Picture 1 (tube, rainbow, N blue to C red):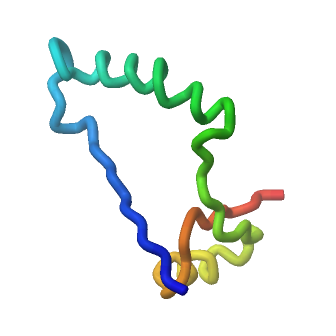
Picture 2 (picture 1 turned 180 degrees about the vertical axis):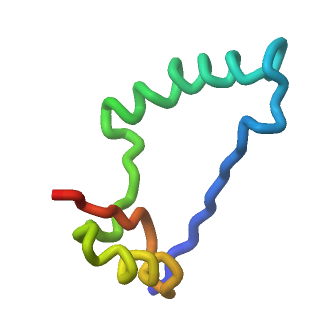
Length: 77
């Protein structure tokens, strides 16, 4: 069964350094609204797999493979 979803993202590179809608204001809003949801596990990252770092090439291939949903982590220990 396929799942429908959407991903929304934005970058700060094109935002002004100061003033309304600037980087400091955006960071303040994220700290105020987003970080509490992460702290309370309301919003959690999706982890597809944790791969030992010596298998990094396989982890990289996994990123481009169909069916990979979420983060692919490299474990250093």
